[in-house]
Image 1 (cartoon, rainbow, N blue to C red):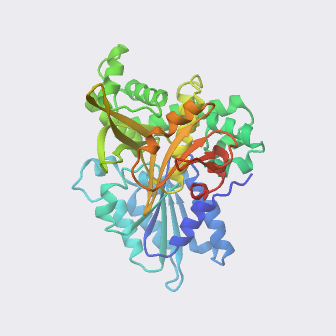
Image 2 (image 1 turned 30 degrees about the vertical axis):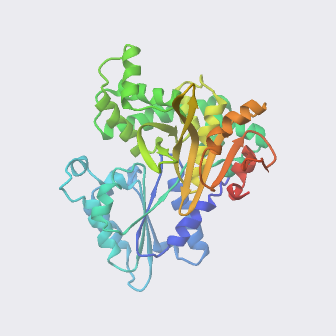
Image 3 (image 1 turned 45 degrees about the horizontal axis):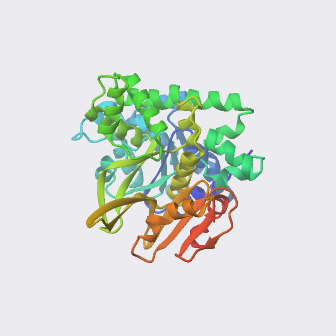
Length: 429
């Protein structure tokens, strides 16, 4: 079964030989290696590139483990660049393995991997691509060490438009499976529900949690596990480190302080397991600060953390819409619209929430996620915040199923979930 990931293939094609180091990031098992070593490699060969001009180094493979030493890595690649008049395409998988903990801990220490990559880049006949499963080695370090020569392509688990065509099921059954088991590519190869569940549980316990604990030398593994489960239980809800600490205290879990939770949240974001959406005052045009919302990058991992016991379709649908918007390249915030009214001679203020304030360049959309709109009362409730927004940008309500696209007298566009997910231009309807 071949899963086409044309969006990311085209992003790599656009960046081909652009003089920058292409950095493919994403959560583990999201398909970074397959994108680079199979899909993009096949594309290069089909366009006439000789296989010997494609140098591949999977650093998470035991056979290549000694190349985690940057000096040996540099020599290995240099020895294979034998012609000065030909371009060589260098693929380094899981590049963070070539960065030591000592280098990461010392902000004043140059990271040797960056020296290797910059040295190769100076040869002029190299086109360099690397993958990484965490953003820590890309954040402030890449800006300093690459000096503007890094170009990031972030890959997510399968979107529903990628998942559905290869699922072998109709839209409704495919959507149900997608919400429960998520979009990590390998999930489609698992034969039954038991195997899918076991795969996701293993990833959580043996890869994601273990990776974070080891990378950051966390002593309280149980505390990190508890935090991940709290976030999984509250997707789509406003929260902050203090609120989470209070939750732990009320549950009798001691020793996990607010500063520790703040650090753990950063670690989870750096590993691409969760994503943070900040609150934005639509009328005041400013960020408010905490509390924020956290969404899981993959719903299957979220469900596995909770032993598949908390299936709330409305929250999972909201999470899926958020991920789809991120997949399409939008910046997504939680909107707040303040309203004032006079009641019994007193001025009252009320804050209404917009699920998503969506921006990309000059584009902006305001979006509500609603599982169902059975009554006019429910419609009024969902569109209340949208009606109060004093600008002309498009306002939409996405509801489940195959609801036909229509626009009401208040200028609100209603669109069915499948129309939204399966048409990349759906926001323009």
